[in-house]
Image (cartoon, rainbow, N blue to C red; front, side, top):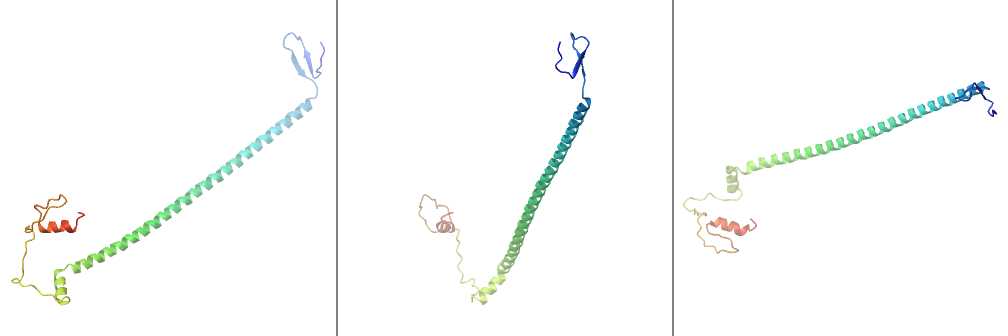
Length: 169
């Protein structure tokens, strides 16, 4: 048998599986192993550094997104508070106007006030009971013709006049 690879030598029988021994430059092999281990260490350090940078970039991105979200929400809250204040101001103004109108209504609905203004400013006089004519407007004394299919029978004069004047009712 001819050995072409001189780095290995065969001891014993080759019939079974031969045991090979390395012969030759073990220092070169050790140097190669050290070099490969250094490459692996450098590769691992580089991977760790890249992972750390990726984590830093991800945390910066998440911080940016959270900050933007918080600022957006605060601006929305501020806008809603400003709108609420405007609505409350308008409500207060309307309440004040309503109170003023109620005060005016109270002064103008006083019967004595109305009577004094009628006699002084409009020169009206108090009617005499002997000269006054009282009319019962609930009694229907006028015959009204039916038109448009509406039944006026049983309606008082006031109701008929209202139905003619306010036809949309």
